[in-house]
Length: 405
Ligand code: C5P
Image 1 (cartoon, helix red, strand yellow):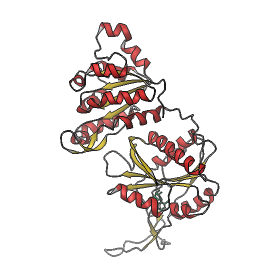
Image 2 (cartoon, rainbow, N blue to C red; image 1 turned 90 degrees about the vertical axis):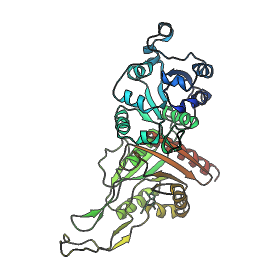
Image 3 (cartoon, rainbow, N blue to C red; image 1 turned 45 degrees about the vertical axis):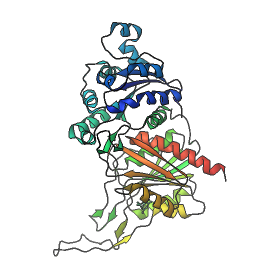
Image 4 (cartoon, rainbow, N blue to C red; image 1 turned 90 degrees about the horizontal axis):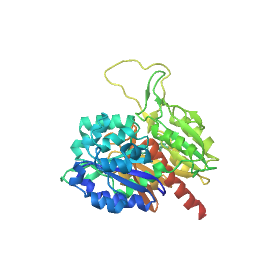
């Protein structure tokens, strides 16, 4: 983890979590970053400019129309200086202003003036985060290419419990360093990675099937990032409408049986198997030869369990390093730990599918990654950023387990 020589412009807006920003500056500088801080007017109610000046070692920027500050480092110069603009905490108000291109103070002006990657760590009351306007602004900012870190869930300053807490400074710093670390760091060079993605489609008759809403985006993002990290990638995809990541071998399948057959063939020379596919649990015992007719008020079909692709591969003696996904709506961690054990996996990435704006069919996700003797929370961000962070964990754990054999 390093932010060596990276110029981080930290924008602080006016939320209670602003009191954590001196710690955030320390965490960023500890990773080697140069940090300059911009405060909005209301942020100064929660944190003192002097503290931030002391910990960052640089003057704090507060006003757009300050002749002395402009003479030292003007706002355009500041926008160009930044390798990344990190806004933490970001209130609902600042998100709204940024989404709509307002530029009535220094921070909002810098957002428009910078070409650097922008990272936003929201912090607000859970109801304000859930509010339609905030969720629409989140969508707009994501379309701008802004990357979200969090928010995290838990108890809030106001006593509410829910999604809206600022991600802890240490996790913001880690996420930023992972995102800014060049993917030319070939952490998976020479490795063959097999990935399943998307749903499976189980036919009932010649025109009908059962399936699910998996978009395949997480698996495709992992494939893309794994190639950038130097791996040779085979991507076994269920029916999805996604372009093939450049440089990967894609095999399209439809049913779970087809996916298993493709995986068995490709896994023999794979080092790592990452199963992101949402495989249908059951298939029809018998696929009707002709279209099932509409007769009677009820229809009974009999289903039989599909093979567990991941467990089948993980059971083999010459198995690759096996990573599973667990999409859960309750008791996320305990179900994920159960699957890690029962399916004999090396690692599992769990996500809560009830979290608003995350998971199935959305652009963003958050993961709790668990392995035998450790775990790590990867806060909410785009599936690409998450894929990058997950691959760092997989590469580390793969190296640890394979160097002791
Ligand atoms: O048991 P559950 O479906 O929740 O397990 C999820 C994990 O197992 C995912 O990694 C998924 O890709 C994999 N899986 C599989 N074959 C199945 C069911 C799940 O590979 N039939």
